Image 1 (cartoon, rainbow, N blue to C red):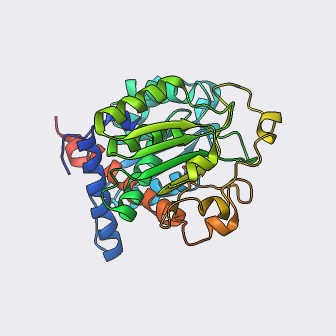
Image 2 (tube, rainbow, N blue to C red):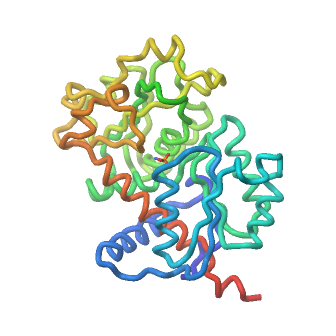
Length: 333
Ligand code: CP
């Protein structure tokens, strides 16, 4: 598969035009149909992708590993504590060496103020595409799967109301990369986005400015509120999810007074009842059940979380299929 996207890094969807994202979605849909039909999709025979994880993962790791296998290639699952990264080897040296061994490098590094910088350093030196499997700022693989899921449920999603809502959780201090990627992307496809969070949990101002610009350019909108009920009212899509107070507090402490004060920020059946009749409930997962969301909601009729997680496979495959050179192209002078 040769195309204009071959060799392009996938670090943030801000670097991808709407037309390029449409191409990703088209290929995702095609790969999904072929997977269901049992058709072979070996576009990347004998290709290798290196998956570098600084943090744990279920969906991202397994969608990338299963995805490259289904495309005819192979993944190396790499944890940094068994790499020389643990002894201080630089992103530059890691990127140059792995480029000589294979066809793409993917990395998850969510350390605040470090992850995105690390990804960009890999991309600067890599001779193969670098795929962001989540940084402190962006999670483009998740946002792409979310857009695919919304499209499947609503068709052309222009003018639907999508609410990205902070929620209480105690499991770990989560990155802001999922809500950041969603508020940047959805207004580009005409959606009216409401971002709701309590005091102390803002997204960076420059992100909100970029999202507002995206909305003005592409016909969507962005509203920010500290009233969660306002965000549920008349929503077509609700995405209640925890993120850490990184912008106002760089401490890695998970539970503190500020968090405890916001226990009420939970997606309940009553709040789902404020939304439109056919509202869908989305979550990138893992969910902190009975903190972020009631079981009755995540296991209920409005929930599409498993379809959303399934689409991680098809979108990951599209990103790899479109950006990676296959072994034969790589050998050309
Ligand atoms: N949504 C998501 O990225 O899941 P994992 O952390 O399990 O990869």
